[in-house]
Image (cartoon, rainbow, N blue to C red; front, side):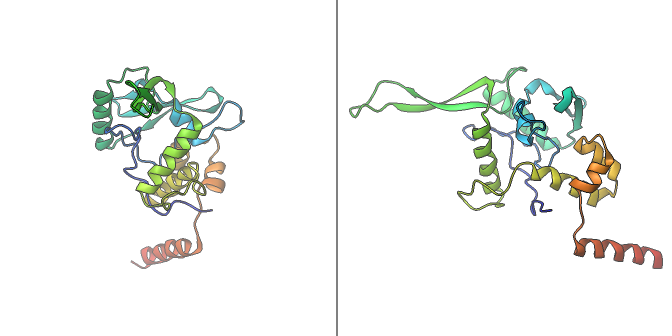
Length: 216
């Protein structure tokens, strides 16, 4: 199983046409899903997030997952909330607006001598970003994080970030139950057997640490 070798931290949840960014560290367990599929891809849940889903006092995000399940994701990073507040102010976002809304260029003004019109970017805050636009956005963030080469648009699915998130949390805490809750799995077996794994060098290093602890 391959994971992202670099954290996609600071990639940002923003529309690239805006100067504002709302950073949502991207190894998070936001799993996107599509209505026409029995499972949802990470981008679907991300596209469905509205500003009202963020709970400022509790520092949480409400996620509407598959099977009509609702769960909360703690977001303790202070920078995220600072950037989110800046984004809300810059775009004058309303609670019902989508975080990842539709953004498209539209012609404005009178045509020039060649019949061409100036293009301006418009946000459609009440409409979700399309799946295709989300795909392009994702790979732009991967480029910024230097995970993919410029122009790459395949090979690094957003769903892989879930695996990365689970593995990093397990590595840092050793708590499989916490990892299960983070990823929102009904069964801890799913977490242990599918989403997290140790390669041989990591396994050897972990065992060496156990032996050192026994000797001390």
